[in-house]
Image (cartoon, rainbow, N blue to C red):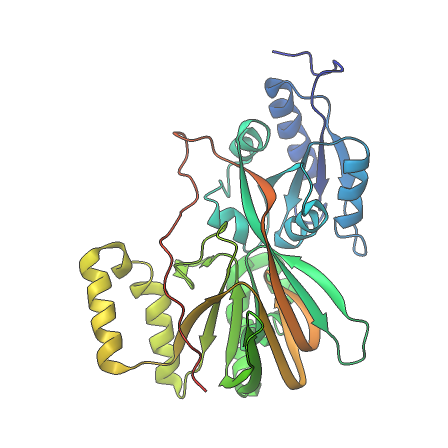
Length: 349
């Protein structure tokens, strides 16, 4: 093993959210894993309310870090990844938040800090896609942001905007249920203009539209089961329920059909047969390399479970395999799932 203090040892940095993590425990676990793997003493960067991780990550790269570990929730992971986009440095993840969305989709440990540290310093590198969203704001000041899991326009963004931050801090993902009950009565369907891969624009009346890089959510929800992290394409889910029964169908689809039935050839046959008979349009999937969405009035928008204000339009593109992430070594813990692609489907009007 190399001397951690030698010139030849690799340099890592940890960008941590002091609100989300037990700082002393994280520092002890990281230092143990770094020493065992032959790395130098890591650099440490704390996030703040106004500096979420991008500037800290850029400084870590400037100081020679070849591994940047994000310790915190989805917002911290997203911010660090945004700054790492296109670089040669790897992203390690120590999940400690409400959703831990990317960590779930990569099958990283959510509650074992020591194992997560071991993977960060001694795991395999995997190149994954990173989504890019260019936002058109009502008052101008357009901005671009990265996302790793999914972006949403419509009721899901309203749900996140209505989520009580205190409940979220104490009860985690269950806080979104409270936000959902408060958002649903106030939410109407939205007429969304859309264009796929620069083709002619169409429109659809939707409750919500999601653009995703991967599709597993907490609570045994497989929202977009065919989304693949490294295929260079974005997966889109359009929800158009007409009644409460339509919402029940969507819930059944993402918790039972997508998670259980799809795992067997018989189950997939049952789903295809039901789709042909019923012509259900409550939940529609399609796929594209780029997506343009537009609305007539400002609508709430979210990225990876965080509120991003109101938008009039969003242009989505994808950086294919532009982010390198540390994942469990092959043959140890389960590797992130790779699913066969599904054919693209049109969006009903």
